Length: 308
Image 1 (cartoon, rainbow, N blue to C red):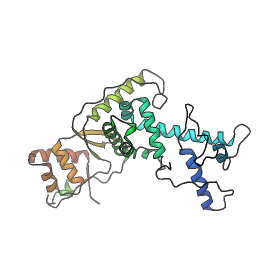
Image 2: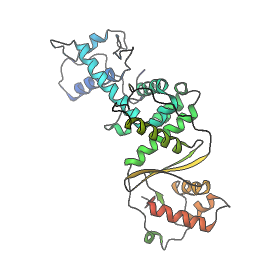
Image 3: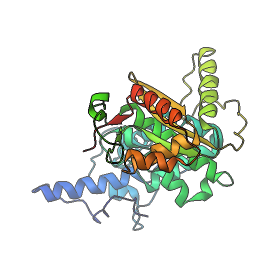
Image 4: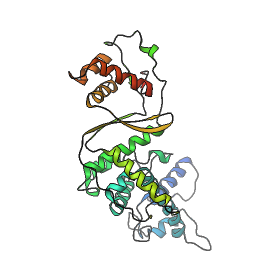
């Protein structure tokens, strides 16, 4: 299987690097050797390459042996460094998903995900951007709790976005003082995510982090990666429809629950509706004083910005 987003490698490495094209060919081949899943209990490179050749033969085309290690052994060091680093990155970004699935199932999910969607960014920050998509595409890794796992992956990715996503100039009262509601369009900050969820995942993730913090205080053992000791399982959350805004304020991450009607209004604004249309989208049950209070809170939190 060719990992998504990577062009197929050449069959052989170039004998000499004479051009930029030769360098790209070499880089592509080495990348594919590194991102292929490790196998066995000892996390080793597969014994054979995709075309059936011994992996040692492939490695010898672009890595020299030394007096201690063969070409294959040197390549394996790089492969393990890559895999353990990105696996650890997913563990760090997804404590809630790990708690939901348990160690064994989460480990299998992470490896399956990274085999199909290896890191394609210069920063580890974007590592889990495609994890919700993968869970939806291949539910076997999370069954029978795929819907819950998908919701958690979306919620945890929203936290990454909120933590360091783009922030635009905040809207001020003067910016909208003279604009009629029928024409006024307001944008939401790019770092803000609106999530309608079927489980109270905000409460669940707080419980997970509290449990992990208590365990960390009681031990000097580093326990955030795949080789950490098993943790006490928390009961899975029960179904409850909640509407959550994941955002940041004063450089800190927050998740704030809002009422269903308020959520509808925010969704409409995010979709480019005018303020009057957004109020109408909230429904007939919304009262003017509610809109006033919501709007005052959202302005104070800096959720609004100018439209581009």
